[in-house]
Image (tube, rainbow, N blue to C red; front, side, top):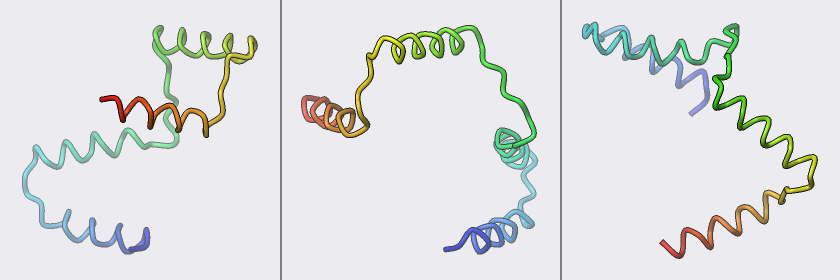
Length: 78
């Protein structure tokens, strides 16, 4: 299904919704994808970004391929 088809299907279903609570939830969800809104990181997120930058500078990085491999190994142990 193309993006346009999906949008039209959603719009058709949305036109018939009368539940205000559901519409408010949908609106809240859609507001999170507003591309004009600037997201401000909280203190924890800023700390994580700084820590990540330090890891990169120190060479503490792995490839996506290695990460995927480690994820699979970890999941198989669960």
